Length: 476
Figure 1 (cartoon, one colour):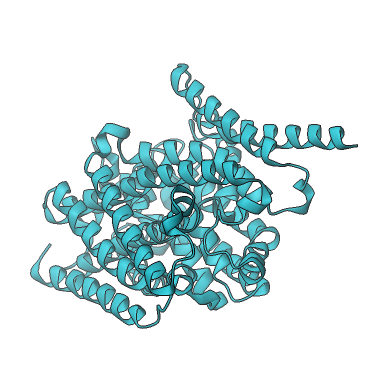
Figure 2 (spheres, rainbow, N blue to C red; figure 1 turned 180 degrees about the vertical axis):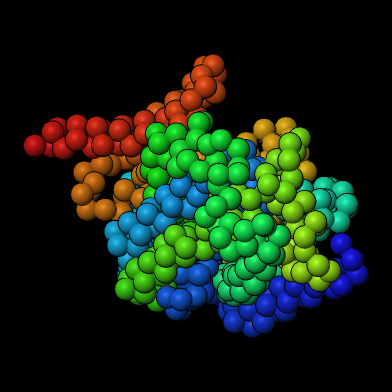
């Protein structure tokens, strides 16, 4: 990176802090801090939902998969997310908005106390918070790897830098700071992504036609929709996981729907996010798919996107692309911190001690900021020790996706009238059963990635439905 690149990156950081300071004036209470007062318009909510699903992992772990396995990445990631989000827009998103309107919820797990019971709510809140610690830590580590490739600074320094910026602006501005950062980073991402797309096309022999012709020149299997171990069964497992994740099982994504001004607004936000997932990744991922043509036999494929950017982007634009990657990660990590803080403050702490109940507005907001600060600090510690948890891919994809199902199924299906007979026994059974399957698959030596990812959530889903039917039979 040259001096001009550092200028671009510094301007981006200043913009983030400015957004945080501006949002500070809009935050008067915990409802403003956690749900933007329920005033998010559909276009802002939809863009925020979309970009909150990205992180530096796209440019590190996913870039590595694109380098080694090709187009299948789009199929099992972006396409399944688009379908899942579209389903969520019609069946789930409006229900989240109504819960805020009529039950005054501020966290995704707050309604579980009434829907099931206190024990179920607390187990989901505690397990979910623990999962997000590792997931968010993995995302911080991912962007630090990119900063290392671009500038040569140590990964430790990169984690501390990204963590510090996230720590400051989200603690100050809450959800308002987060969603407006999402919007600004979407603009930066589009500019940077289109720039990278055009420059890589200009450096191919076939020009624009290379979008179609390059696949014959890539390693065998790179043009296939499914490329082992990313089989059709793996894609279906990811579709199931993504439905529960993007419906709100991933709590920060639920917050985008909860904070929408009405059910119809939440629905439109989900549709917009779905359309963006269908179209934009085709442009964003193109340089990753083309990387084997420019960088042969990489020992570490996860570095492919960063090396491509270093090789082909002129001074200034390199800083813009890096700012885009920072924006992706900070968007997700900040929204995670904000939402998990709401769960801790609204659902966990009041049940640990009575001194956190019925706080005045000023103390409630102060607690929200302290909790957000502390959670972000813990994720920085995890990021610094990412290698001990299976690396970045292990933290973000394997652990998070596999553990998501057991806690997200009671949360999402609990919103639907069709599952109203599935009570606390069904919820607890699905959580425990899914976790047992997750542990068993970690112990048993098996080579199926689809089974490792989809086994826990499928087991949880079956148990939730079976126990619900059993409860219905007992009552009839």
